[in-house]
Image 1 (tube, rainbow, N blue to C red):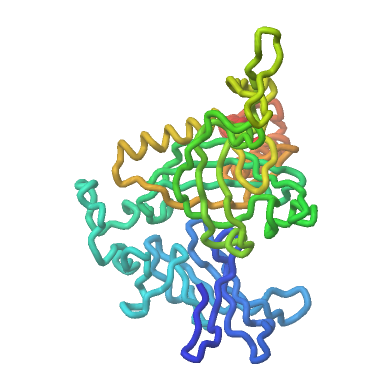
Image 2: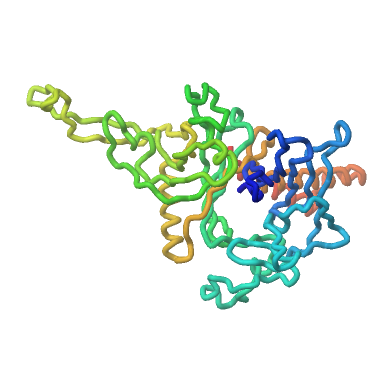
Length: 407
């Protein structure tokens, strides 16, 4: 959210992509932004802000002025002789805001204040009774290098490619309130050309275009349609199963003002309409002259696939049924589970004509590097036909990652 001073003038405003990537400081007197007012974050996989630079370049081809750089001990305490902050940037460990009302080592995690100097929250975990074997003030079960603090809600990540004209699909990953992956499904995130988007479905800020990046609240499930209307068949459009309803929080989806984005199936069935007929085989009409419908029969298409949408996230009918059943069981087994947020992130990578999640892509690249190093050593030693354990392990890891391709 933007921050204003007492006079009503803009003091700062966040910059969002699929998540917060920086801040814009105060506007000029003429209401324009100038170079140097934008501050951009460089973060790692935990959201830790490692460096902040402005968009003011000193010479052509150089990066902007560095105003903040931070190195952290594992639990988030900044290393003094390896950190600096000349621009009063407010965010740091896990991307959270520094809480100076306590001390420079504390961060506001929304529900609680965290002290990075001692690696503990300063108040009791509201779910402490559910985990009697863990310290009531612990931080991520003492594993800060691998985990971030959970929200207590199940969340969804949708990983997509940055150029939907080349690849309009992605991977939807469901995580429980501990951040563990419980299921994942291939989805389609490609919109449709329409007069409302000037027949440019690539412009995600316009209606009916590709699914926008950003953060969405998960509002709950909308009941599916078992039998649709003849001229407005929601079962054909969305499938027979429930739909997951979403609303904008931040990023492109908030900037665009678009709404009614859902996760749903559909376009995977055909239908046959049975009309009432007399003994001669003639259609029987009602008082308004319309044919009387006896029943509507739906059948799975033999070549069912994920069709494009008007900006929603399309999933196979069987997959969303499994998704819903998995969530229902999860919430029954753990009463603390509740809907959290869905994030659409453009971090899918291409390799060899296929598309991979970033973790698998990293495994492939690192395995390739290790294999080349082994082969180089074999060539140098004149032992080209031998296979070392290191080479075998890397080839195995690479193949397993290749097998997990999205497409």
